[in-house]
Length: 114
Image (cartoon, rainbow, N blue to C red; front, side, top):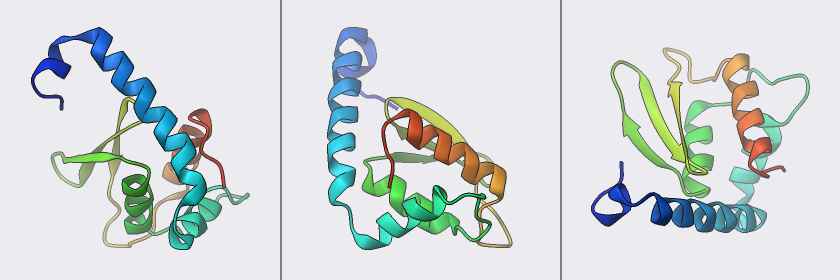
């Protein structure tokens, strides 16, 4: 996931993570309307069953995420200095309610709200 000097130095990693998270927290306030709508859908209560996975991926990308393909339909998301593994839904494009709730919790824990 990391290359060169960042991989072998925990102090640099921590600095990178803290700078990266600060940037994300400020940046999400000025995101495109499409991503803002996705964020609002994620935070809808009761949990929405109409959140398309491609929109969630686009939101993650907008927040600065890096992705790595895993086996099967799994995708590794590196964001907020953490790695989460999600399962891409298929054949339906909609994300299941449990995954949407987990994503909402992860975003809330990192200060991202609509």
